[in-house]
Every structure is written in structure tokens, then in C-alpha cells.
Length: 311
Image (cartoon, rainbow, N blue to C red; front, side):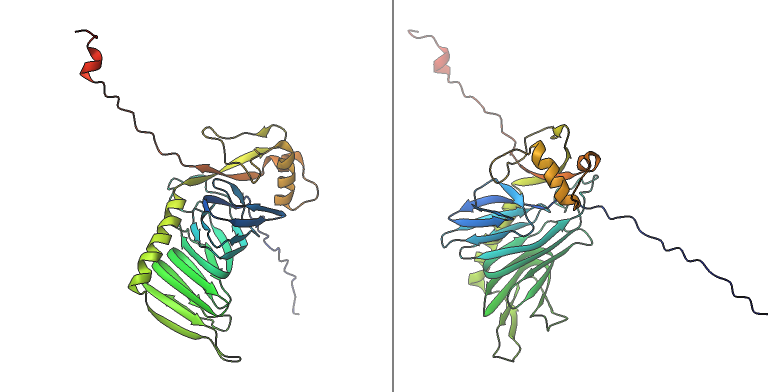
């Protein structure tokens, strides 16, 4: 007789993945007129403010020059007449044992679209698992670290690589893409209706190289003007900031309050009702401008000032 035994399979369900705090973007330099839309707020860019990055749209005027820093330590220069759409930027919880401020504080996933204009990106040392994608109407650029510039218009995209590692795909029909080497540029021009785009890869021309270096330097210097930390938000006791300088103010120059702590906690946890314990666990990213150490002032006293008058 054939005996059939029943086998009970118990699925192993992984615990919920820790959700990181809402990622931020910081204005390191603001010149000219630049409009920023972050959530339901629309405001003019001004230096030394930080705001939520996901869903933000940046529009620069004709005389504008701006530098931003993402809360993963990546700097971005945005030239005049540009539009930058931060479709997605999420970070895992910051590593508690982080020591190297030049290294990304946690794994991040970002997707940024540039319909028009010019941006220069200078990354921190990205950690394994991070994905950074910039797109234009004609290209998808996968940045794995380094210094890259992107010039975008409806009919042409130019990607410049100064250093690092990037792969450029010419539209969705290009599954593999082309890996650029430092010092190369890739030009993608829109093809005729029904035709694929025209692609050219070659060295960056010398006159353009200096311009790229200058703009990349602005993005790199911006990275060094700010650091990002995570603080615990305590709904019943207010915000307990770590020792040191206070965090950068928000869009309206206000410090976090108990009221918006609870609301931000609900938004982060994605629940209609949040208990006090849950809100207690919510973390917030704050930007702290780096202040250079002040050198001691050496006072020079002349011998004449030490001799009494009349002698």
C-alpha cells in the first residue's frame, strides 16, 4: 500500500525593512532667480535652507547659478535656464557606525529627470546597493560614482564624464547602453520619425573641458559646506537636538515643533493614526553647515605703543 504523507510548508516571512527618514536637499549657493516647488510649497531659493527632496522641482532663471547638496552627500550644480525634477530619492536609515564623512551615510535610490538645461553632479563615495539614475528626453544615465555633467534639450542630450563610472542608454529601446570612460562625452540626437537616435562617442573637446571642471568644482565645494545627521523626534518632549550648532531652518525659517513632529511621523509611517510610541521612533534628517575652524588672531603690538608719551 502506498502511503501519502502530507508535508506542511511554513513560509518564512522576513520582517519589515526599516524605513529611512525623508531625504533632504540643501541649498549651498543661490544666485539669480530660482523657483523651487517642494510638495505644496513654492518659494524662491535662498542659501542655507533644506527641504524634502522627493517630488521637488527646481526651475532656474536666465541669470541663475545654484548649487545643491543631497542628504547622501552628492553635490549638484544647476545652470541657468534649467529644470530639474527629483522624481524619487529615498534613503535607508543612516549607519550608526559611520565614520568617513566622504562616504554615503546609507544605501539610497534616486531618480532625477532633466527635461532641459545643464547640471553637474559630484557624488560622495557611494555604498554598495545604491542606485542613482538621471534621465533626459533622450537618455538614461546610470551613475555609479564620480563627476558627470548632463546637458539636455528636447532634441539633444550630451553626457560628459570627468571621472568615475557611468552607463548611458539612448532611450528605452537601448537595453545595454554604453559605458563611458573618464574624459569622454556621448552625444545623442533625436532621429527622424520612426528612426533611432544618432549616437556619437568621443573625447571631450579642450575648450569645453575647463568649463566642465569649473562647474564640477562648484558642485564638489558645495558638498563640503554641509553635513547631514539624523535626530530622534520625540513627540511628547519636543525635539532633542544633539549638542552643537542648531539644525538648518526649514522653508519658512522655523524650527521643528511638536505639532509637525506628529504629522511628519504619520506621513513617514503611512498610517492614519500613529501611537506615541511610533512617533517616538521617527527620525529626521537635519543639515548642519560646516564652519571652518577659526584661526587664532595674532595681535601685533608695536614697541612705540609701550613707551609712555613724552619719553
